[in-house]
Image (cartoon, rainbow, N blue to C red; front, side):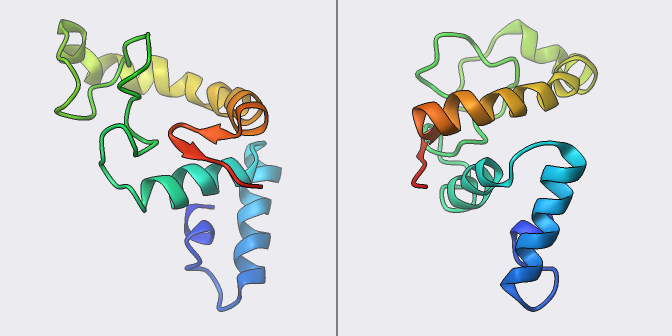
Length: 119
């Protein structure tokens, strides 16, 4: 799915769309459009720009992100143990979060993190 979304499978756009949708929507049960906006449009255009890259924590969010991903984030003692709790507890729940975020952010708010979604 990741390679198809980057257009690196096959020589035509039709292959990218078909393989990406089959792998993301039929196999994983998530929508390809939020992934495209978040990863391709947001992350690759604004790579590691704190406050703009949707892969980084939102600096304006009320809740602290349980992951330390950017030096601009304020450090807390919990980040010291993220190598223990992230793979097991949080990344296991990421699949549920992605499916909920498809509706709450992408469809209703028309955003995916700091990236504005234009259908």
